[in-house]
Amino acid sequence: MDEKNPQEAAESAREHAKASAEDFKAAASAKAAEIRRAAEQKATELRSAAEEHAEKIKGHAKHAWSDARTRAKTWQSDGEVYVRENPTKSVLVALGVGFVLGLLFRK
Image (cartoon, rainbow, N blue to C red; front, side):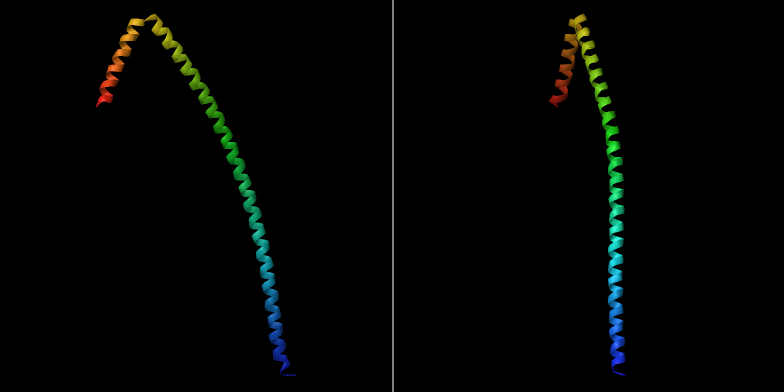
C-alpha cells in the first residue's frame, strides 16, 4: 500500500495541475473575450466621434467654399464693371503687369 500511496499522490497532483491549467485557460479566454468586447466598444465610440467631427469639418468646408465662390463672382463682376468704365486704364495696367511678370519669369 505504501507504493500506491506515492503513485496516487503523484496522480492526484497531476490531476490537480491539469484542472488548474484548464481553469487558467478558461479564465484567460474569458478575459481575452472581455478585452476584445471593450476594444470593440471603444473602437465604435471613436469611429462615431470621428464621423461626427468629419461631418462638422465637411459643413465648415462647404460654407467656406460657398463664401469663396461668392467672393470670386463678386470680384469678377466688379472687375468687369471697372474694365467697361475704364478701358484704356485697364489695358495699360494689364500691359504693365504683363511686362513685370515677363521680367520676373525671364530671370
